[in-house]
Length: 296
Image (cartoon, rainbow, N blue to C red):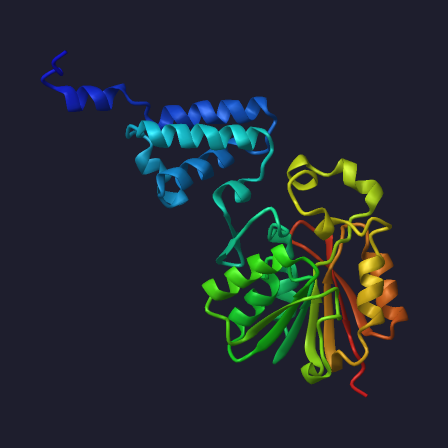
């Protein structure tokens, strides 16, 4: 059968336009009760079309290649199954930088940027990140403070693989050491003491796990979420091994759950740390506990 004389134009007009696909995707995510469905649909479409999210509107009137349409609608279905957007696109923005994201490491979250802000309020030359995961905390601190060096430890080899990738992508191979081990197990006497120790440990109590959003409960590594206990055992372990690791005058900064401020600050005080403070995130929820080792 001969093609129509105006075949290229006819074919383009037969393809679905970006705006129509976006509307279909948003409606599908609404039915699936995905929070902020319009935002997620736009992020997925920008990813598939390989355009900056802020410029997506310029491309919406254009027809979408059928192969890209299939890819987009497949991702939308996976999002409807509550797979996190970051896992679908493989990236997550954190403190102005993009980090590789996989199901093997905890997804960097905006509220963790509170820990970064607190850490950057004072100078430091060395930093230890316990349970580094994707490396987002350690690598962000090193990137923000030229000349500093740091060490990240994690019990999970797959999580460390993600951290290695992010470290190399940011060009921090010479300043960031990554080692496998539980808390302080990977340290040696040659490492000396650190000016700053940070951690975003598993702090969700085991009886709270069923109430987490499906994106977290079903797709984040359980090892990074809960201690399978009261949610405080990681803090006890960190504080128990702090002597000989945190330098005199050095700071310990940890992320906490919104209801843990009083309990964790009490543990800090009992461990002999001074100037213990609970610091909220931008939403006003308790997010970080800070304590300082005595200079003497």
